[in-house]
Length: 375
Ligand code: SPD
Image (cartoon, rainbow, N blue to C red):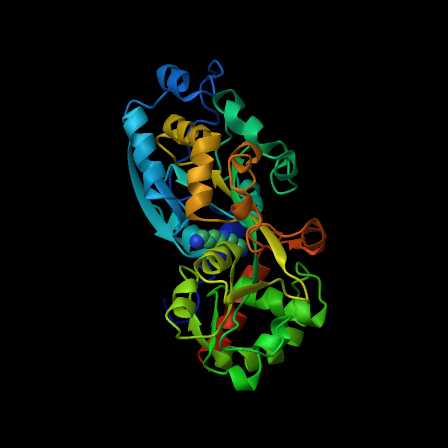
């Protein structure tokens, strides 16, 4: 939990340099592709037997906090003998900053769609070998071949989701349908939100009916007064575990990741999930291998492992986001599938926008929100 200015905008500046050919990743690029290999069997026993691994039995994962269950890591290590080292981040921008600072030697990262788009443009990801990923067939085709990575040349979906409002209905009886219902003076000091500049700006854009990717200087000027009114009302900025402030009773309203909303709904039905009337966006967080990975075979073994239905279900049980794995979804209970925060209706999904890479405008987004937070 933190109340502090959001992260630097430097990582996006670094990406812009890379795209324009004036920079290079801090980690040395590896070979373009992994060695050709026979397709591994998707079943646990035979995939363990036929699995190709790197000489060093190690895997360095850099992933979102509260997203990769320890029991999944343990099961992978037990089966493969590969020791997994996990480091967490709370925003795409934090991940990019550390990735481009070098030193992390990450084998797997977990970027969201707009960052995947930027990393591909920057030639910063290693292509994946589909022969090593037979379990890709378990993914719902709706979440494959998406515009940010056509043909899934670089990524496999982890979890998808959206952002919505959580209301503690024991404390708030007013109707709360959208962002403007949340950000009212009378709720000052009773609100938790994500600590994420792109998110905050997108909510403001939704209210002003500006398309979420139409990030121009002019539109940022338009949203500035709205955000300047909202930010002082927020008591807690927390992208790691915004549910905590709601469970502890520190706040009564939240704008949070859908997986957090789903956990709250499971914990106590007094926590109502609301998809903002003004709109929200669909995110697709995926696994990708940075160019500098030194254990790319181990990384692809992990990718394939987590797409097994029973392993995917372990992820969905712990972190109930919108599960893109159809075979894993088939193992989930009716109650899990009926959680309104995990699984929006088709009509709600159809209204959701998807963030695109906005290039160097990401710096302006960060600068705007940071300047408003310090006022
Ligand atoms: N605790 C895991 C949170 C993952 C949220 N990723 C969504 C990013 C959308 N910009």
